[in-house]
Image (cartoon, rainbow, N blue to C red; front, side, top):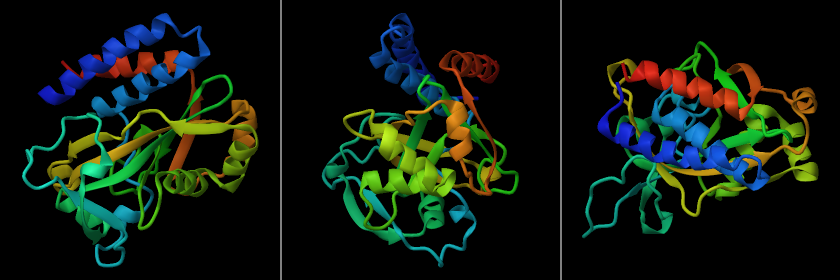
Length: 254
């Protein structure tokens, strides 16, 4: 069941959703609706942990040493930020590079991105993870990536789309679409996977990207070349996502 932090975050996001639904006729507010839908998916843990990328979790920890981990500044409150709280990355203290697996097993703070992709009718692209992945197999979610060595936030965005959806999708975005950060600062994500997840603890400072493909979902499907770790995908209306999340929320809180 959700812990108190999740319930509190759900309440905050639900209030945001009420305002967003009242103004969905204004195209500029679709961003707010998308933020509500996808963050609520994460808060209730009904979607896969979008932060865990591709196959890297399955690689031995001594073979990849390419994500930067951080500590909180010394002399300050060492309590981690609350779930989905904004975090100024400039306040974090770099502590060196480790493997993704080591970062999760030791609960180290790191950075990454969730990438929310919509077609020109504001349908949200959802991906279902393959059955053989270590973390959250067969769960639905969005494109998610860790930030690799020497990457800027936009580099992580570009790599994530190219790796998971194909080069043609990124080319289409550059020609006809657009992308931007949805928040002033990235948000803090925390999840303890427990014994079923080999006691991994995820602490990620997460950039939220909105990507407008600039094409219809039918056109996008002709461009998509999803990687082998994506079992299936679909474009869903925001209203459908909202109903799905609400139903799962009610079930989770029983």
